[in-house]
Amino acid sequence: MFYACTSLSSFTSELPLVTDAQYMFYACTALTTLETSIPEVTNISGMFRSCVNLKELNFDFPKVTSAQYAFSNSGITTFSRQIPLIKNGSYLFTAALNLTNVES
Image (cartoon, rainbow, N blue to C red):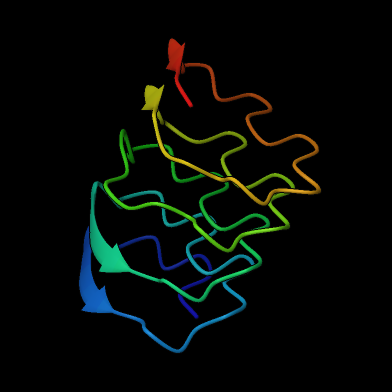
C-alpha cells in the first residue's frame, strides 16, 4: 500500500477490514508516527521492515499468525505489543539495531 513511500512521515487512519498488511509500510524511511487500528490483520510480514525512524507502536496484533521480517532493519526501540497467535515470526527483529527491550 505504501511500499517505499520515503516521504511518508506519519499515518493516521483506521483500517478495520485489512487482513493482509504484508510490506504495507516497507522502507517508509521517514515514518515516525503511526496511529492506527488493524483489528483483523493476520499477516504483517515485512510490514515495518526498514522503517528506520519508527521507534514505537501503540496497537496490538490480536489475530496475527505470520510476521516474518515484520520489524527487521527498523528503528524500533521497545516492543511491548501482544502477538498471541503468531505461528511464523522468523527474522522478526533481524537487524533492528536500536531494539533494547522486548516485553510480552
